[in-house]
Amino acid sequence: MPAAKNAKQAAPSADEFRQLIAAWADDPVLFVKTALQATPEPWQAKALEAVRDNDKVAIRSGHGVGKTTYLAWLVLWWLMTRHPAKIAATANTAHQLSDVLWSEIGKWHRRMPEVLRRLLELKSDKVEVIGVPDSFAVARTARREQPEALQGFHSTNMLFVIDEASGVDDLVFEVGQGAMSTAGAKTVMTGNPTRTSGYFFDAFHRMSASWTTMRVGCEDSTQVAPGFLAEMAQRYGAGSNVYRVRDGHPLDYRVMHPATWHAEQDRSNPQATAHTRDIE
Ligand SMILES: Nc1ncnc2c1ncn2[C@@H]1O[C@H](COP(=O)(O)OP(=O)(O)O)[C@@H](O)[C@H]1O
Ligand SMILES: [Mg+2]
Image (cartoon, rainbow, N blue to C red; front, side):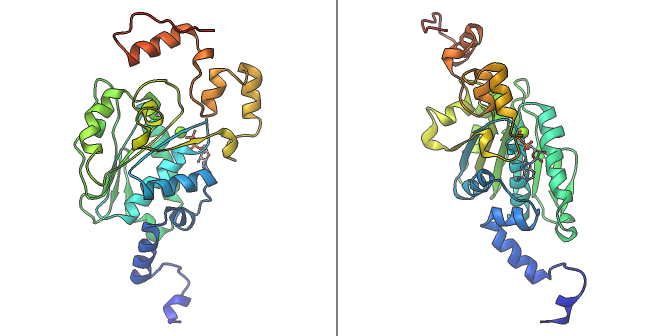
């Protein structure tokens, strides 16, 4: 073994580094374990591999299962293993994007070994790969009045990341559709299934043939406090929509408040004039 390997600093040589990156490119779970020194939940491991193997991945889940963390890992994995790599990230609110997703990216970036960490420069709305032109992740707010969050991005390795996608206005997806459907581009959406219509909802229903989908319940993640669901069941009832959504299940019309049901119907069918379905 060369003397350099016994030196105190554990920094890999340029050759070792290239080998590591090549191994990580096809193994996001290995990347998370070795580069970020994290232990993915089984669902997170499965979902990381789903993005490696598929272009369109949608995950509906319960509250606090680790989906923002999962997206932060994806962003770092993509930037470290694709050159060039471009990521457009958005979320239902500016708060969710900047204070939650971007801060989660920062948290895991800080945990990377120095030799890797210095390859990325974190800014408030951007992560840049040092020395690689056109390689970055950018945070773009999604609002109906500003629907171009996902529009106009192109790259050999393009990744679209949408957190709390259920709350993102459909116009944002409509405007971004061209870029998102470019050959080879990948899209990953996560969210609580809070609505019964719209782009995120459709991924699990009428458009499900185009998407690889997962449901993650609170019981599937050790990140959720054990008493959380029991408390929700006690407070709202295990059959209530509040409970269902918190656990990643779709809304149940039978337990929906009439006003909400009507609002959802109006959104999915603006022409609807009569609502004949029974509401309990
Ligand atoms: N595999 C993991 N290992 C360690 N911490 C994790 C892991 N997954 C999630 N977390 C932490 O658990 C908390 C909740 O995760 P988060 O991604 O915010 O959940 P969600 O977006 O589903 O509500 C965060 O503090 C996050 O950093
Ligand atoms: Mg989250």
